[in-house]
Length: 179
Picture (cartoon, rainbow, N blue to C red):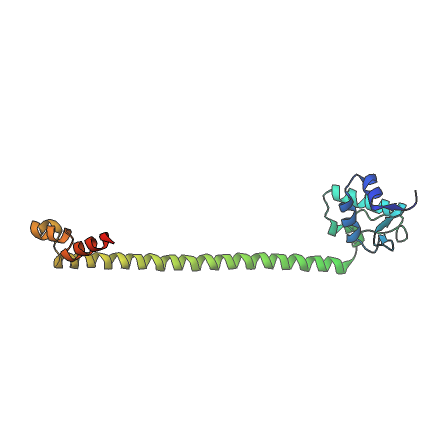
């Protein structure tokens, strides 16, 4: 078949050209560009793209896929865990990562617990302030009722005087109504 362009590779694999470009750009060491900056694919490259498609269809993410060319191995690596299956340093690294993840989860739980305790304290302080304000408001009402008796205890003429607008206000209103 020879050299294929992005459109040909997309048609062969039944994916979009954008997808082919994204896959190729994720593995720049495996896929070459021509002098115009366009990807060109050999038979081997098409096999690698098909391998990427199969891995993605199996639920793997692009960043977790490891490619090997036929020069490095007779066929592409089927499982990333096979690469480091007997590597003690990799097992040690994975154990450390798991330990860090557990520590991170524990710290996150501690932070949330501390924040909840602080919020509970703030809520309790606010509740106490409300109780104090209610008591202050009640004492103000009691003291004002001693100074100012309720309206029904005031003489009716005084109530009428309080409700009627003053003579100055009525003159100002009449003055401004002419303007």
